[in-house]
Image 1 (tube, rainbow, N blue to C red):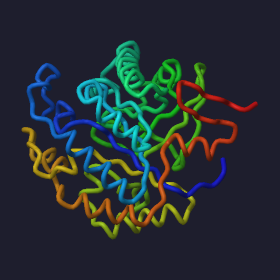
Image 2 (cartoon, rainbow, N blue to C red; image 1 turned 90 degrees about the vertical axis):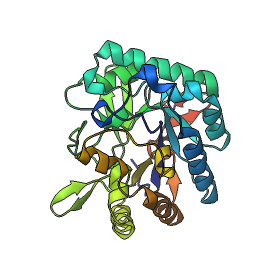
Image 3 (cartoon, one colour; image 1 turned 135 degrees about the vertical axis):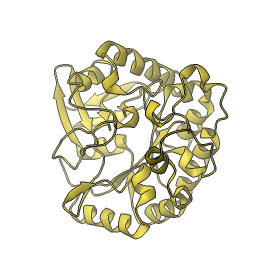
Length: 295
């Protein structure tokens, strides 16, 4: 694989209540009755990306795409990649293979009906891929996915999948290959730490995040950033949860926009699709449900 130091910007398109049961996620039956902020937060993100001419991979929850198809269409119109985040934000290791397959196919079909393009990339809710789901990559390939960004290479509350790979890499299964985009981590105080998304991006100071990003870039490693629309709406409704979960969910929300502005202004970005086309020779992705692999 050729060197390609450009970074990857990703968005998990979900609402403020799409978290986990442990963090106060209400049952699916109540979602439609809750006030939503995903539309305003996501449009703010798209406008910010436009300013810096950055294209992102947008991992849409199927529930959100079905309720707000105009958001999928708007992201596509602005040149962003449409990808899947599953249907109902279910934790992967709490599902059987059959349940998982049904969930991701429902989401994939909704997204493809809206955008009339093949949806090729997936990210698991809460990065909940673990070694307890050995069927995961094969199930993705079997259902027509080509890329994934579920590997969080350090232990965390809801997942963690050990790998020594820091760059996107290829996983071979009996059903086809998957291009994996692991979440970026960097060494700090003797441990591998994520600085580049979610609560980590909110917790750490801007200068430290930029320093770690520059460090990875010097090593030829693309930094993968991830963000949620709710983080562009600091005053969004709060869910009931324990003190530690509350801190992790809501710390430093007002710092997100200036941090993103600094990140976007000093980096070059590509989507997962663009990275595959550039870095994995012989693989060409085009729209309208076609895919070409040179022999």
